Image (cartoon, rainbow, N blue to C red):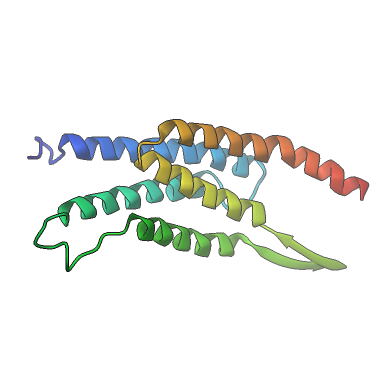
Amino acid sequence: MTGLVGFDGAQLIALAHIGLAMLLGAVIGYEREWQRKPAGLRTHMLVSGAAAFLVTLGEVIILQHDRPELVPAVRADPLRILSAVITGVGFLGAGTIIRRQRGEEHVEGLTTAASLLMASAIGAAVALAQTGVALGATALVYVTLRALGGLERRIHRRS
């Protein structure tokens, strides 16, 4: 049964998961924004939140169709839900990748595309109540983008 505004406890928890996923996506998006990359704060927040939302909806669908009379006709596969999220993020990631000619071939946007994929995985982890993993992964992504970006630039200057 739903509460006064149409929310029950499970829906409030789902909204909290989506909000947390968006917050963690903001951490990654902040770094991309700071680096003036094509997908920044809002994009990463929305990707992470959308992943959490889609995984949550998938769980709801699975629970609603987990009735003995429907089992032969409806097979719910949680991995398909994750696969659909990854496919959608792949299209977004492809849009951030730019190939340019500067004397030699130069590709930009791969790291941003990868960060979008990680943001979606973090959102999915939050939706699956793997909050510790999501927090740890967010920290790892942030450190990777911030600390290793400088190291990568120094390596490229030397070569």
